Length: 129
Ligand code: ZN
Image (cartoon, rainbow, N blue to C red; front, side):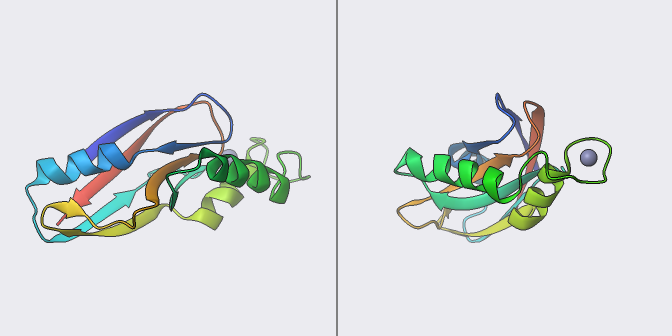
């Protein structure tokens, strides 16, 4: 299993980690298999989305904050319930096929670490089998 470190700068921020996941796949030596990407966090998530136009990521960040506002009148005393909800909406894992030692992603797809309670230092687990 490989561990990727991510340092976020904003409260809500999507970070493209595709290159880091590709590196983990290369280091695994697996030619044909499955790449699992897992977040060991309750206010972060992983998603796969557009890697070309950065406005798509900005739109997702902005719209998620409108959909689940930080001050939504939640019970949880840590003040980060919006982050917990967003984390569950996106999910904490993704699975990508590996063929010929490479990730099988669509041309416009990138793998994004999603921060919903930053800024923080986070980690991502990658296992290729
Ligand atoms: Zn909390």
